[in-house]
Length: 148
Image 1 (cartoon, rainbow, N blue to C red):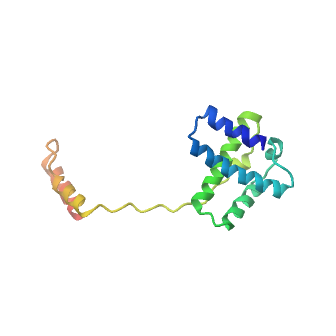
Image 2 (image 1 turned 30 degrees about the vertical axis):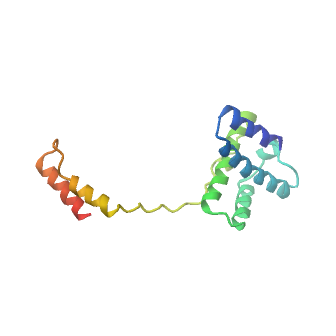
Image 3 (image 1 turned 60 degrees about the vertical axis):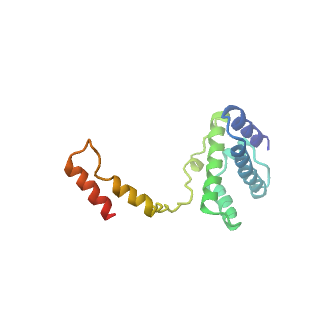
């Protein structure tokens, strides 16, 4: 767990991340390190982390998925792991391309929120009143907003 403590110190001291952000990274990575200890039979060290394969990380993410984590939480876990590996690269010259190129779950795009009736009326009332635009542009803008 020395590696985790050193990474947390880096986030706090050098990156100056907010306390809650650091706690989130620490929680995510403590779970990852605990899983690796069980999965590999020994605690992770930088040298052991260098030898991890993408399938090991995927196995951890699948384990967490079975625990009921959402796509957003899985994506955050993967982001924490990738941040750890970027730090390992700078600190210990560990480059693990397999993990760097792992992709998280695709999250569906949310639909935009509709404009309220009052806001729509205000938009229509304002459309076509730009004194700097030509008359036909003002008419076009008013017509488009009326159609919407």
